[in-house]
Image (cartoon, rainbow, N blue to C red):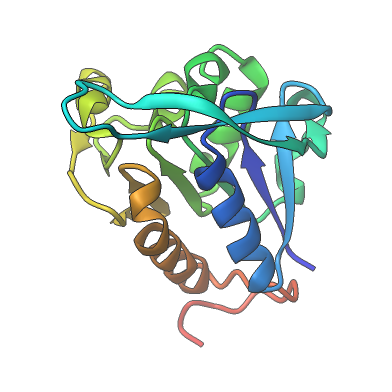
Amino acid sequence: MTKILIITGDAAETLEVLYPYERLKEEGFEVHIGAPEARKLQFVVHDFVDGFDTYTEKLGHTWPADIALADVDPADYAAIVIPGGRAPEYLRNNEDAKRIVRHFFAADAPVAATCHGPLLLAAAGVLGGRTSSIYPELAIDVELVGGVFENGGGVVDGNLVTSRAWPDNGTWMKAFLGVLAEAGVRADGELVPASA
């Protein structure tokens, strides 16, 4: 069975972790959660309140991480997913998280990131010259590293699929499944050439 890694940690957005986790499992992929440590993580829920300048944050679900990022061999995985929430704010300082991201970009393998997730991509130095979405208030973080911000829910640039936040989950994962298919990545582990 083909494996996909979700890179996340405490304070990740519940909907941005669990939606791709379940959606990719539904397609038959084996999905692992990678975090700084293999332990129970505390996710959060961000929501919007009329008249409030930014989002609110409440405690969300807890979920176990399957593997510590230091123990990840990226060659074991066909693709990665980077949810948002606040986890990417500190994961961008994690050398193993950046090592894993760089591997997937060097291999031109499928990568999905949403909301604050592209902060990790920016820190890994892979967004220069690339078009990506991100939570709109963070567009400057994409532009400061030489990337191009596109305000969209399923922005595709080669191997990369990005979106703004959890309201884009369906569009984001539909686009990512398309990129996986285009790359010949199948849940049963067979690699199918894109021309097949």
